[in-house]
Image (cartoon, rainbow, N blue to C red):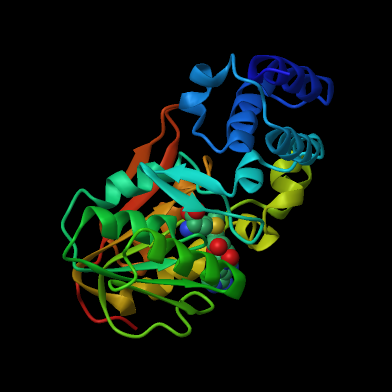
Length: 281
Ligand SMILES: C[S@@+](CC[C@H](N)C(=O)[O-])C[C@H]1O[C@@H](n2cnc3c(N)ncnc32)[C@H](O)[C@@H]1O
């Protein structure tokens, strides 16, 4: 069978299984089975698919049919222009989170703290953009921290970042001029409506803190001032309907110059505030 024929068969198989955007996924999985980037696939279409690639493709398609995310099958996800290793122990870094990176890069920083670091996508992207900065990523999940450390080594950033286990700020010491977070923010009731790729294959603790979905913002807004230098910034990703609640929390905590950033659909997805530096309670 040629690569083109295998691709056609893969698309038909994924379509039959009801996979959304089957052609896109089939291209990625055929390219992965061949060990090439999907941008190179067109050049290989007339070649014969080697037996080993055929077996790898069959296994990959079976996983995708059971609604495993493509990123878990290939083991990688592109974020802010860099490749991150991902698996079912971490949230797949999402395109929306690139808005948080852009907002964080608005002003210079030296020490960044990433709360709920997961794959390390946020802190590592920020450090890659700012060669003089150092960072700490914390997470409650030890398995996620292993992935983040591996990503730091792959990106050559391991000397400027540390990762440690912490329940939000519990084990954090020192002061930071930038605190960033994409915390779990779905309400408990939203979980049942998620796609199988997310509901069955991403860690529940990465998706929801339980209840109304706002608990992490309550903790982060209230406690961040103790860990910020004067004029330090808190930048957080938001669920699409949470801006008003989170802005209120940040105002009550004493943050000033509050701002939100919209995604391409016009929804407020990032909130930022400045810590003025007066004493905290
Ligand atoms: C929405 S994911 C974000 C992952 C990554 N920062 C990203 O944007 O791709 C939230 C992360 O918070 C972590 N987390 C959940 N509860 C936590 C807690 N109490 N303390 C620290 N991290 C927590 C989860 O393990 C998960 O990695």
